[in-house]
Image 1: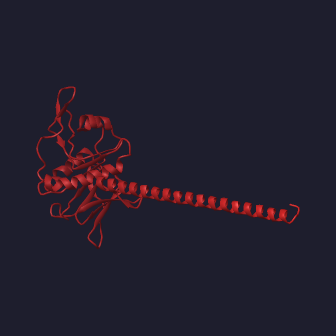
Image 2: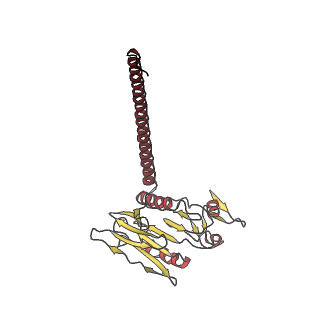
Image 3: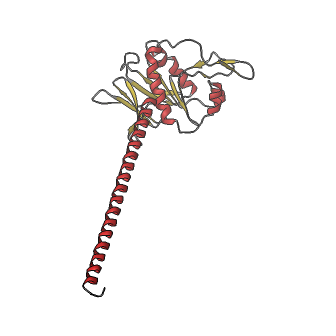
Length: 260
């Protein structure tokens, strides 16, 4: 499927070619994009996407780039969805965050030509993640921010257990490389972000816990009702016993000729 501008210039949604290292990158790509998308799902005018063509020169469909993941704030979501491509001149700004996933066929481009292009387009933050720990990029994780048209590195912290992490001001999150996986830490909540599957599992667990709690409450209410019913029965029996005792006393007084 393709879309057209008013001048009939075609900006393809895909080049029709499979990803060179799709088998290797696809599970990493899916987890990262779904995690960030789940985090931002309730934030209006924010788009999280990946492998979507960004066209950066109007009238020239050859000028495009496709980050593995990008985030853009204050965007025209409907326009992006209707085009299914990111046209820089229509969106009015570049993405606020871009991330590439290392592979044997993309590492050189990610650290060279793409990095230069992202700087030229004005993408404020550019991160590179190497699941192997450095076989492709030479390091597990690196983040950079744009200053006067050039990227400068964020401070990356190396933990004694081998984990590497850094702060992303654009996402307001900490990115952690941990044993090959990329995790996202929210310092405001003190929790790790969940990917879509984890969030769904957590939601189902929460729903099951809530149903279990509601069932326990219903059981407690039923037991309380039974206790109240037994108490009412006991009071009724006690009242009957008192009534019988009073009647017996009255009868004894009558037999003895006593005044009631």
